[in-house]
Length: 538
Image (tube, rainbow, N blue to C red; front, side, top):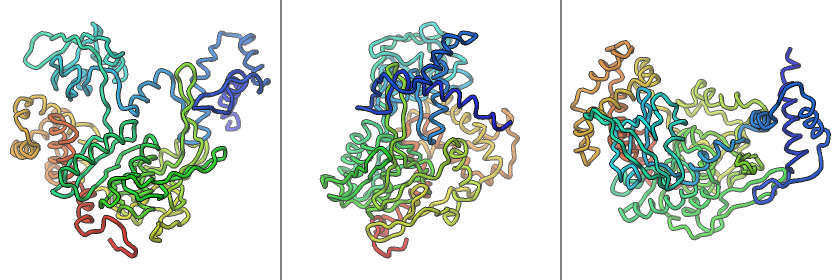
């Protein structure tokens, strides 16, 4: 039985290779485009022709290609991928830093599109849309019950085009209609920037997109004007993006002629990237935060800081993506992102974690394996199987799977109970926070400072209200566990309400007060240990 398991894939592989190599494209690239060739792979080309001319039923070779290319690329490595023409625009919008739409963020509440935030200066704010509004129709098409992707297609559109929305608003019996002219909506990747105290700035970078470096410079300038003498750069959960953007950002902190990263592959000769000495913050004490969600360009940043002994890295071991993808566009708008090289940190280590070709599922499960063996909770559980390398000061660092931080901060499980886990996993806390915010928007809008809102919320007996709300929806009340996890419940509930009523900035300002990694970073800075020194003990 098993010997026939790969037969469909092999046949499909033949079909697609015949199309890609025999009929249309070469395995040579120029400027990111695939060149047309006339010859090669005649046998596979003949197979396609035979299928088209002789197969018993009608068959769409285009459909076969769309379904099979992703399977072929998954046989190469975990990060080579295919993006269909239908999905390419949405994927690229995130990194390009803007898209054309109406200017709201939304979530689905009881199958209804609910406006969470209205982007300042955007098309929706100009016509009067408000947080809490339910978008029921778009150009007479109902949005109730649709999936997020379908809703996005209704709300997005070419710049200058219009969409008529039917809005259900609290205290209004009839739908309110707004005609909105779509415009360019910025996608910010530097989502949080503020002073943690009188001397220490904090910047959170969500991804490395086209405009991230510019946003980063603006944030640095504003913090510098506010008196910044130290900086924490938070890359936790940052899945990466453009390598050249990460290099530009790293350059701000390194003296001239320091190696930042280099890339090399079988068909790609080694290419080194050095700092040019023009950075404005070369002496600024710096701490970098990472975790298992930090990947690719995030690891380039953290690895360059660590290997050059420029910053202390705090958190948990990063994801381990050290493969470089080159986009190659087809004429129909679809794209292949093909792995062409590996990137290496300045000490010479490749951060890519091990993988077996064709075993993508096992690769994705690796983070779960880390969790199960206790790596999220104990630094001693980190497996260092790669070769030992050394930083500029001679500190030992390791290749073969992510960036291991200089200071390990475990995931916080204090006062965790099964009742709390169930409330989180099944969305009871999130739903309660939304319902509370929705019912109290007028009151919450009166608070100009997050600290004042937090103080007010702590007096509203939210834990009891949550327990009643969740019990009515099927979560059996457990009083002992409710009290044991009180701190976690209150933190999650209050934080979610602040997020719903304000923005990501205020939300993170609230959570960072209790964030172990942020607090450890502040302690390291206070002790004068942000910049590593030979023989330093943390």
